[in-house]
Length: 128
Image (cartoon, rainbow, N blue to C red; front, side):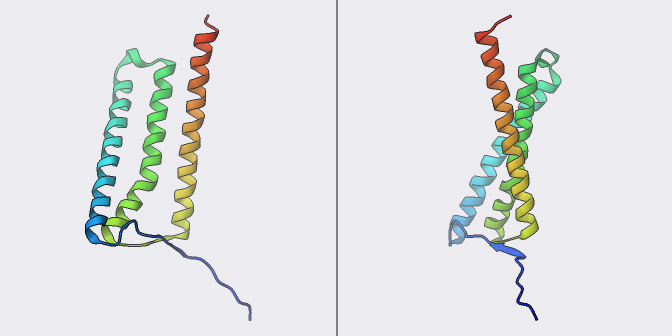
């Protein structure tokens, strides 16, 4: 008989112990996430609708807005759920998926920012 243990859930520490502070945490996260969603959605719709903005710089801005939406939608809903429903656990597979997608979107953002910086450098230092 072997001694085995497997991890099925991770316990999360709450940011606050009282219900009022948890509700405030939920409202702050909701406001910040809605502002980010609205701002990124406006950027995406403006670039998609205006044909004058179909240039490489705005193409990178569109992709940056999409990756920002992805990184926000990866972590914030679980934090809002935990503060509103007073739960303090996440499944192992949920944690792994959240970590994978968050790392994917943040590395994509860094990659896009690097390309945008290099594009600016080339256009300023080595013009056509």
